[in-house]
Length: 113
Length: 112
Image 1: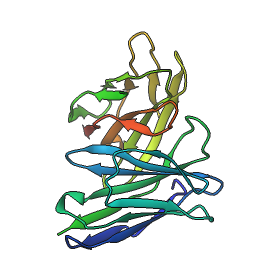
Image 2: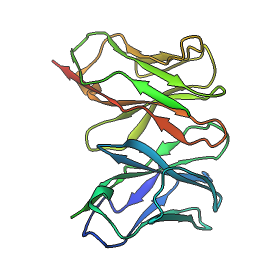
Image 3: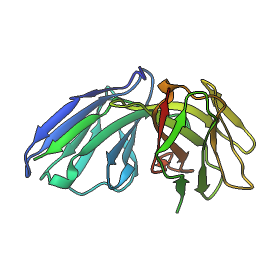
Image 4: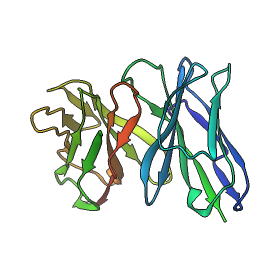
């Protein structure tokens, strides 16, 4: 158990809908990262937050957004969903120091029908 | 840009065989290097890491050495078990942003 929790574990929805994925980092970690794992793109970095502020952005679509709250949990919002958004979404956390180990949650499996 | 290249899978071995999974990287600066493992139906678990040249990371019988000359971080294990069957990901930590850049993953299947 990494100490990172993600909810829900599975999500099935329809095209055009909007969903919110939630992540709670390990106790004491200030940084949260979101990754997408899909069959065609592999594991890709989406976005990072550090202590409530956006720190780095990757290949995140404009339809996707995220935020980190004062209690340090984070939410990833996916809107106008398309079939191609079906993937496993991972959250990871670290203490935010340079090149520190990231600990991954169990992931949320999203299926868009 | 920075990238990681892993050998294609699946790798199929008999129990107690020697394992090598090749990983090479391209990066500016001197990133930290990682091996993560993903067991069926689970998330990513850190297997081992190395933060500078010539460092050797090790865990659960797995080892990898950070080779700056060959820009490699190959994963090895002397004697694999059926329980090692999983997908293994090599990754580097992007200097400056700390995002992880992953290889495509290598599926390992160990048969008794």
